[in-house]
Length: 476
Image (cartoon, rainbow, N blue to C red; front, side, top):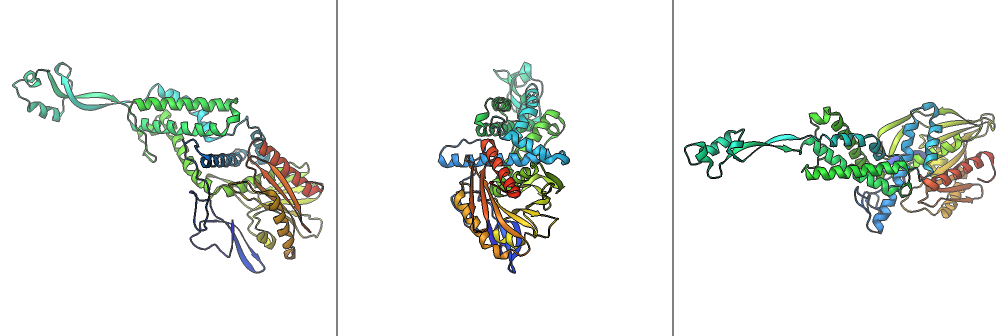
């Protein structure tokens, strides 16, 4: 994440997080993607892990590191994608999302994923197709005994006319064979090539999912995926024996792939897996964006759990079929507005605000809470929220100390709003942690949390404590 005067220079891959003005100087906060290789330019970056390719097990330390990073990314994606199902009932979005996240706190109940849906929906389709794998009769020319000749084409007749002899029997020679057209079964059709490509891709996806959930071996979902993987491997082996090749991505579907119900569903499943594999590259590069959305949802859930909190306004959330620069949904600002009935305050959850103000702009915080009391003439109070994402674990203690010192330095800019508290939400990398630092006039909390299991449970509890401490005082 880099800050530029006015706009980033041309040639720099980026997405704008926030624009604002500090003391008359226009400032742009931009996020640059992670490089897809170990290093990148514009800006220069080095030492990044390379995203693991599907179907390859990690072999050395660097590949294990990359596999762990991919697993954590998939866990965050799963929490974000659970918002899509929660949006089925717009009147109860946050309660439905909270229930899904609570299930994710138990690692023995593994996350929903595309391959889990396939194991449930497409396994019966594969079983049914296995009983009726399509085949075609294709014509070949070969030397055939006279008593078995059924068909001859022009080339066969030309061949026969060139053989010595006056009759067909003489031309057949001692072996009594002539070149004739015969029909043989052939399984190498486009629909079977697509089936072969699908089962191979699905088996790799299932293996990746199982590797990411070793603690869920006793769950029904794990057993379902494992059975599906074995089925896919068995069908792939059978198709290999039948000499069926593998379809290339982008193949134009034929009549069978469009009209046969079983083959059509397999083609659609193959295309979904292909799109997911292609999208992973983009999501890998923009993990920091996805993490910010995860942090925003965590804060919103924590506020929604307050007994006196009443959701009075919610931004329309536009869910995308594919992520754009790591973001699965687009919403207006703020994403949610709560009314605290007893304390009489209004709380807005702001993410990437359009008018951040000089304090948030200078603090480089593109997430914030805006707290106002409509019964008083006090200026609004803001809580800056930083969501740093990194491939390695962030040291929280110095981070909160630096943030507290920064908030102290920004106090002279406090003209139309107040900023004295802050929150850092960062990936736990398997070790949840909290930290706190107090400046002369500020207090900043740091929380390292994960997106599943104990790291999620402990991290969300820390976010709840911070929210309660912010609104009601006392230890957070």
